[in-house]
Image 1 (cartoon, rainbow, N blue to C red):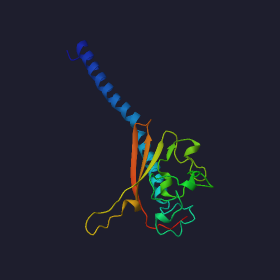
Image 2: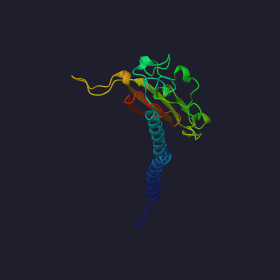
Image 3: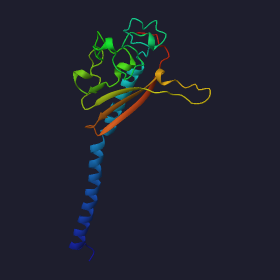
Image 4: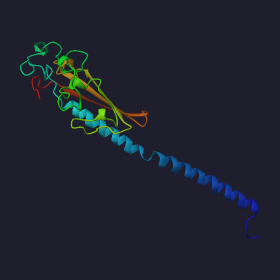
Amino acid sequence: MAGLTLIELVFFIVIVSVAVAGVLSVLNVTARRSADPQLRKQAIAIAEALLEEVETMPFTYCDPDDPNAGTANSSDDCSAGNNEASLPLGAQANAASEMRGSLDTPFDNVADYNGFTIQGGNAGSADIGGVVSVPAGYNASVAVAQEAFGPTGVPSPQVPAVAALRITVTVTYNGGSDSIVMEGYRAQYAPRATP
């Protein structure tokens, strides 16, 4: 009279089994996704480092390899093909052999990075000195475009597009299904300062 019937015991086992299965499925999803914040943090670190690398490069009237780079008063004073304001941005005429990881002829200005991509985990992702800067599973790309910035108005203190660059760094990870995008601006505040 004070005990449980077999039917009550079976119902109890079924209810507890369903509850435990639900809890275990939540724990399984949580455990599977627990590494995702670390992947995202690594992608952010890669994007920040690459953006900082590009932003610290010179943005001069002429390519720093141009003989007129230190004396040019405008982009018109540059040798043919070495104008930093010419579109599309990229390696200049005398800088065709420049590579990011090269000790002899590294990238030497912001425009060189336009269209630059890194496939993580291989020698092509090495920075100056040969250190692999992007681990396997991550890919990075850089886009550099002219874009005016600053407030508009009269008088306009806006930096014109020819003297300002928007740098966009995109890092993909998790098999390409996730990405981080960081943007920064670089103004031409020292147009004759060469490295």
